Length: 333
Image 1 (cartoon, one colour):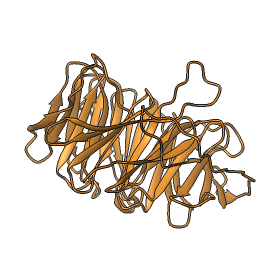
Image 2: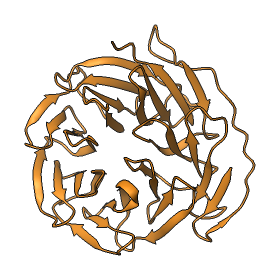
Image 3: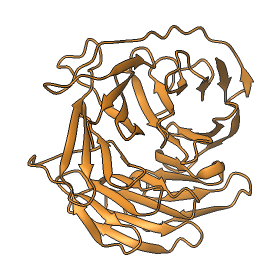
Image 4: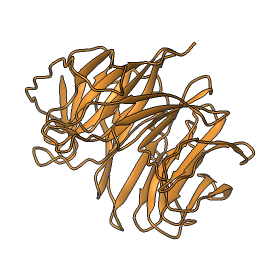
């Protein structure tokens, strides 16, 4: 296990005992196929690579862990602030699983997932960081901030561009694998798809309330935008036209993560209500639902699903604030 501190760029060792947890909780009639404890005492943030093989988890007390699916020990452990408290609240793995970006409120870091080494560490002077995303090969980083500005930054060349289309706080950002397009959503009830080369808006997706989550299909087919009330929409990213709206009865449904399946047939979402949902992209109908285990000693029992991912056509993975990764069978044809 490799441990790296960005602040000093030196490695240090940290003992860690990670056990296999076989207990789980689900909706009636379902149980996880397996469950692993990734961090002790819960997590602040997490992301799962598009192929489901890597998970990056920000633990409450012990820094950032990188796990390979099926392995008993983490690949790497990272830290923004040495041995101080871990405050990393945003994590994103690039579509090619080569780099990850992590951020706290004031700084963001780029890491190699090949050797675990830090590539760079940057501080933000103006406003605070709300969300981050990274493109393939770590070539471009997207940083959404609380003042409504979104920065696109290329670490190698130092090129940067600020998108000023939003009028209020940014809540969620995503980037295409090639880094050419960004999807951003904020408190101004709007999500924009825009060019990171020119800053020009390509499509505007409007909502009746603040946009809380955005996600792009890595194959360039779809975009997903969801607000704080009842509109959760899948769009054709080429035309900007709606494909479907997620169908649910609840007056309010919040999502915390979303990822499209490789074949483009399904959308997988996580929620702060311990729920993982799978949806049919073309109809917006729910086709599966799971309930993750809560954090220990929480009253009432609760957990936020921070990350979801497809392992294969028959299995999905979730990582939640409980610090657990849970494997679920889809029962799809």
